[in-house]
Image 1 (cartoon, one colour):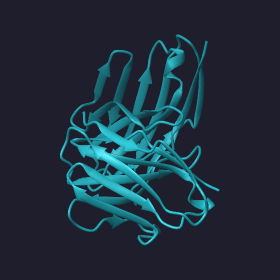
Image 2: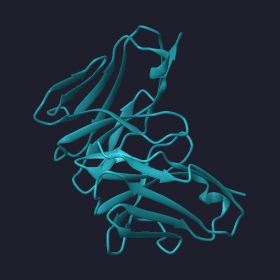
Image 3: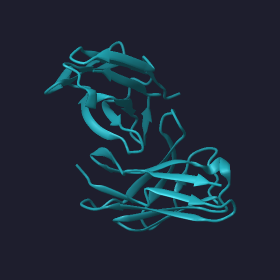
Image 4: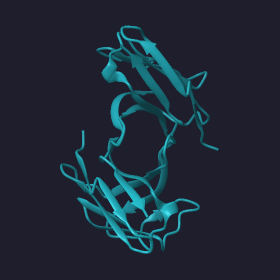
Length: 112
Length: 110
């Protein structure tokens, strides 16, 4: 399966700051990557679909100006949480569809 | 709309016993059903999957069955071990995206 690397694994930031999360597809050229958010003891919720070389597609209710996605190459997609607030604290996970869906290791974001 | 239900939400079994988790999906157009295992603080890991042209698939202690008519599929884990303790998610592929079940927290008691 595809190997998906995600960094950082954990980040703590102050309210109002921005945080960038990187997702790399190490062995598969991914024209599309997916970003999920997971709250404690809940399921995976798709936030947006990242498209290489074009704009991301956001799910209903997800603020595109708050969650900036950049997919500049076939191996890298980034998610930037801008002006983070405590309610943005969550587990963010990226994934790549290489036939099947493979996930990164996730990023735990804690906003103080 | 697209929906996946999953039961039970929590499951405790004694080591060595079997565990069964069941899922139902709403849209008959789905034809691919993966299962993921998620350990605390980690991303989901694909453990087994099944396509709609197959009724059952087995990989060592793990098996998945699919009843396309009834629109439900199940995960079976035999001879459970403490390292099987995790949250398990089923999913249905609807082409553009996957829809995940709410998850089952499995605890294997030594």
